[in-house]
Length: 72
Image 1: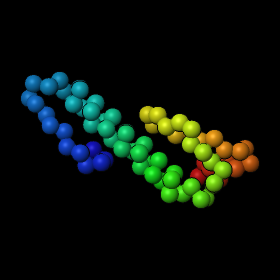
Image 2: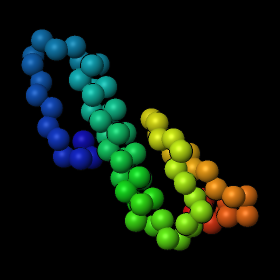
Image 3: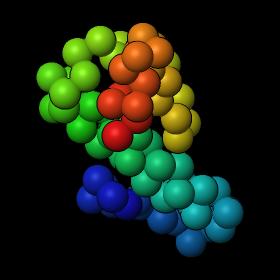
Image 4: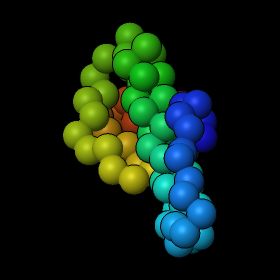
């Protein structure tokens, strides 16, 4: 996984459940990295406010005039 966690696998575990754990865990790691980047770059668009972070999406509330700056 992206975050470097290891998954203990028992021989009798259902294969798709193991694969799903890795896929969803990596997706979660990516979302967390995106939130860190958003925090680190907050001075570039100080009017942008995160309102929702779910699955693979981060939703920001930002004045229309700053929308393009917030998008990058």
